Image (cartoon, rainbow, N blue to C red; front, side):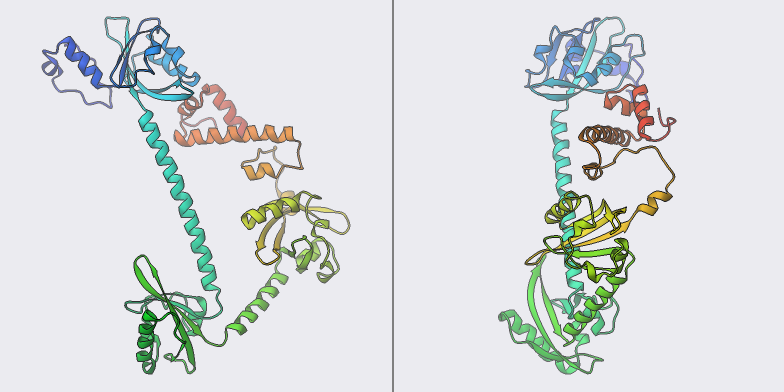
Length: 471
């Protein structure tokens, strides 16, 4: 039996003549049926003359009989069909994926073409990839859902940690079974003179003075059967004062924990002192800061903002409309407040600041909205004028994100923005294709439906690396 040699990625039988000896024509046909979902018989002109279907879905394949194979595929798949039917090149022994339009969607099919040594026919063995494609889509959606859930969990954890650490009085979380401290906030560590996270995994009983331990155990037992018992006065090791302790139970991951609040009598003082420190730090910070009310009128501004707008003092800015100094009239602050109402914060928003002499300076704005009966808006403004002047002149760059495109509203015409949006989409698709193919330019051009020359031209246009990458 005259058999072709196997390609490098295949391991042939050691003695194929002995194994296939005695195979009838029907046996060979059955063997071919086992290798794919259907088989196309294609003549020398590339016309499908007959089909053999090995699955229940016959509606996809039967209408192809009598048509050229190239007429049944999508445009980007035509080069693959031509390569598989090209008799001038060495016969390829590999599978190629092509797409067939059917009922308003593209059906992915894997083909392996076999050409008998002494005949003009091609046999295209096909494997239907619809189930695999649907599974990949489900996997992708599941992965995206997990990423969204993970991001939401991280954001929730961050908010919890910020809230927990910024409570002015000591708070401990302990396991109900062994009374080991699982978490303690900053005030809790300060009370016992320990640095975070020194208290974690230590025993709550070790912190309590010996004379108060029995009362603490009895108090914890009372919490298990009573909703809100009165606070317990306890003493702590190495601390002279006595403190009131209250606890409440909660469950997490099937285990019970105690949320323990310690009244040290210094919470209000610490809070007022920290607020004073924060205000002093904001006033002295080098970046401009301004707090505005719901009508975007200035409540308070720091020295850097007063200097930026060339005002005599920060106090004289109170009550003035913020849009007199910040942004393009009726554009920037409206956009910012809309984003803040939707997302509560904005980072690196490009805008301008006008001083009292009418001069404009480009700035980046980060903003936050504080939820109250009437919301407050805090704006941090950083000048980027010197940074832009220090940069060497370069050719115009295309925007690289949707946020950058929306920043162009009011600066460029809609026609210019649409053109730059098209360039952005083209660049992102090329970058995705290069990542998908590990920077193989030939494969990237193939999946994008471009010639290699066209791809190189677009790579040069978008500045995506040199032209000496992988072929």
